[in-house]
Image 1 (cartoon, rainbow, N blue to C red):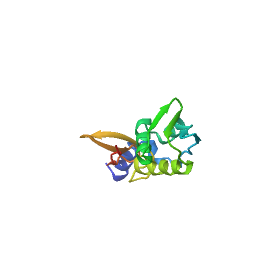
Image 2: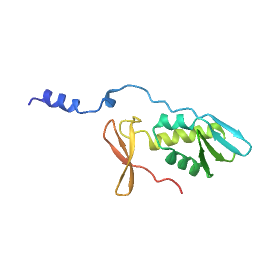
Image 3: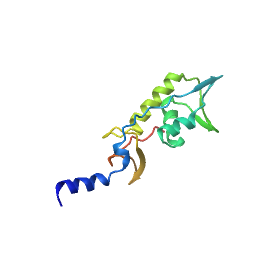
Image 4: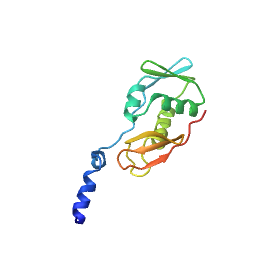
Length: 136
């Protein structure tokens, strides 16, 4: 086999996501403060946008804000008053740490567990890396 044939064969085995040039945008958080509680009213849209489970994301947010959080239907409820900018900054930090691939910088990652260690595996380039455990 020639080099070109091998190259074409290898390229054909790559997923289509590798060749996409679409731009990933972090979703905007829509929050409302009522009394001593903060509500993220578009939590489902945010989770769909970053392709993560509610449990992991909300546990991260609760740990960073040092507060409790519950999921009530289509909204997340945080104890205490939290500014929208603070919530958006935490979302951006979460995406950088737990969603974006460290090698190709694409958002096409999934969590897998290897030997009791949570790993982030990229569907686009195949790279995997350990992620920091969440605060308790």
